[in-house]
Length: 159
Image (cartoon, rainbow, N blue to C red; front, side, top):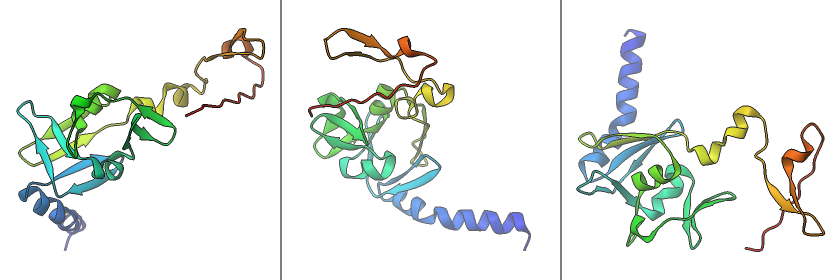
């Protein structure tokens, strides 16, 4: 057997669970170089993808909390219209955070790119975002005022 034929057969076999779930109302979501087969996904008249809230951590690492969709220390507020019962509008969330995505509803496959909020431009530029915080006397201090110097920034939140 030729190497190309072997790899094609192997990749086809790996997709069988995804194909079976797609035929039963499920679908496959591609995100961050992995494939997540879901047993239940829905689309509405506008083509929006609705997934179960419980599946969200497996898809992109976010989970629904009272303050919004949260992943590690990032929480993105979400309007109530993005949730219906136990489902979540994943394409509306992607649009809200500036995430690119493509869909093939006939094949029941959706592919999502990187989330800019999670990656952040500072990763590529290696420049920390300019933040303003009050000093001990309440005077605002900008991080950019210390450009070229070593800075230790300690923050705390009450939530």
